[in-house]
Image: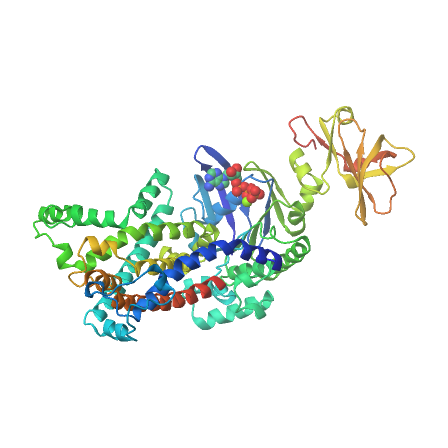
Length: 301
Length: 334
Ligand SMILES: Nc1ncnc2c1ncn2[C@@H]1O[C@H](COP(=O)(O)OP(=O)(O)OP(=O)(O)O)[C@@H](O)[C@H]1O
Ligand SMILES: [Mg+2]
């Protein structure tokens, strides 16, 4: 499509942005990599002498080889945190895609005050994660004053203590609430781009509403769904604020990100945390490569 | 079998009446063309027959049975859309198989019909491709293939050729006509191209603003247009409609004469005018002539070899047996 010339021009114009992004990523990334191979526990007296130490690989800190890496994975908290991460990512993806498709189809119907309803549906996406998690925690899930507790009592049931009885589910719920609008928005645009003549043709070909959805609408949405999965996974692997302000990592809601945070800030072991960070980078990249392949295959069609 | 009867069928969108009550009978095996200017309601009428729009009044009967409330899938009609409406994520084979799959037809029967359709439409080599990898003409054929495997009572086409280039259009026109001869199934074909209408139809239905202006065979419409609208719409280049003294002399409000029914000479004739533009097509020359009272410009179809140039003075004589006369209300005077 593009000519040789316009491609060169495009590269040239993208160069500054790419450069800034690289620096932005490379500095923290290389710091993490270096610290992962060092003993660095500030409370035990490990010190960085000056900012220039970065250039000489921090001579005041001892090299410890792969110690931090083995210690990080052999800790009893590691595998549970991986499982929790996958459960949360998977749960949020499932909820946001299933309900995203349903909501998108609903919003695609002509209805009264369409624009306003759409804005309402999109709104949660603009609420900061910390705020929305606190709203959920105090307004809905509080076992004595929360709306859910009132609702349960209205039906004569004992209120659920959400954040300690079903902590992982609660967090999935909170995070889904934030990401559902994103999925809905992308899926809605995709649904709107579906040629109505295709649906009419299918109708004339004898396909009922379910078949039309399964054979026409869903395949049409497949590309949008993969994109939603790709983007959301990458963001969801780093979910932090929602856990921080609700359970604080207790009751089995400690994700990989949260574990790294605890290693660095609560146990003040920068080396160990950095090693965890390197694992997280590897995990995220595996996911990304995997997903890029799917998307690439989908985009080729 | 596919005899379709429309009985006082009406369609309104909100306040706007797009199709006022309309009666029409389409006989079994007939090739009927709906033709008319853009926005006259051709597509709407076709979609009413297909069941994709609900009628606002009246009755649609297919083979004598009331089909007004029957859902589209049950009307035994197949439609070919202007955009082809192929399913982009399915191979050509799956596209063609889709209606049979929905009807839960046995696999061997499906395969047999796909083979037959592919052979008839020259698609055998493309069965495993996706629609995106086909040319416009091939896509068109896939859409037709998807329609014929259902063995419908009637085919509905909505401007199926308008996305194709001129050469391909002529080819596909022939193929569809041949298909009709072979299958002998009722076909309803919508177009705004009067050449398509003339060449393909057994029966042309000329529509204007949802009204039927005239129904008849192509030659009937050409020879005896019922009013000035049909006269101007059918035939290419369009009929010259002359008002004023020339028409009044014949006791009419408007006089119509087709470009091919005017003799040109440089010597003498009934009218005299100057040549504006002369379009040389090789086989014919269309000359646009100015200075004839009541009609400007007047179009004449002359021999391809005729040599006239801009500004030349020419003399014209209409062939009296081909003159059409219309009254002040636009209707033909017999
Ligand atoms: N869904 C709709 N709602 C309101 N008005 C409509 C709708 N569909 C069609 N119309 C109107 O009905 C009239 C006839 O439309 P239709 O599509 O049948 O025209 P057409 O003869 O097929 O024209 P074309 O040759 O441009 O395809 C138009 O004036 C159009 O604006
Ligand atoms: Mg139309």
